Image (cartoon, rainbow, N blue to C red):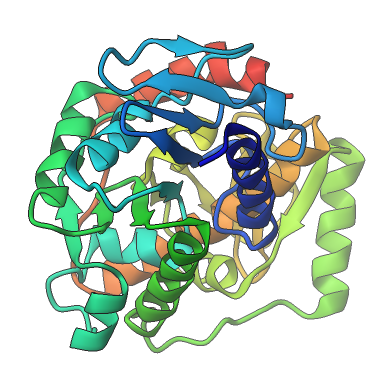
Length: 330
């Protein structure tokens, strides 16, 4: 593909993924094959809305050496594996989409999916867990792709989808989310919300103490808040941005403020989640992240699966994020 066109396609795809909620903040990555020996990929930790064609990084497929203004995505090895294995693959998208992330945690083996859908996705497989950017993750994804699968669930992480062009890759990403959505199990309890008046009063009281606090009141967050349980990190992005767990408290502004003094998010019974961050983009990302984390926790609990990231991996990812990626954004 002509390099100028490929750079523009990658930028457009990043913005499209962000707009549709298939990625948040700077997570996920997009690449495009140039020829048999090279590909282009999104840079590491750069806001998709600010990424310009000249920011896209060139990578040599045989040596993995790169050229550009920024470092390439840490998952460049995963993309390279796809191009090495599949001659027909020209475009690769890695997302952290909500429903597919949940199915990657529990229910993959029993997933309701038709043969026509499997074919449309180019085959489906699951890769075992590895820390982001590490060789173990690349090897796990490569092993999954060696089955012929062009769509791979990355346990505790997200998915990677390969296509013959951008259109096919995006269609597969969307189809996968639709399939996974119908396979979600969230239990029988409907969201039990506080009255709008009480919820508004509670949030207002919290903001008097913490002006950067905002409500994440999606159905999944409200449903989880009704369980009055701590939510432990099951996904890499939660571990990175929120740490090992998010507590849950009764519907009390005082209790919410106390919890937020130590952490960046708290579930509040009948309200959902309340998050805090100085940066408005970070607040939006945390709102999406608490909703997704609640969705995954509800699903794994309904499936009877006990899923929790290891303490060492969680601490390491949180440390790297705070020292590196949170400062690189934008």
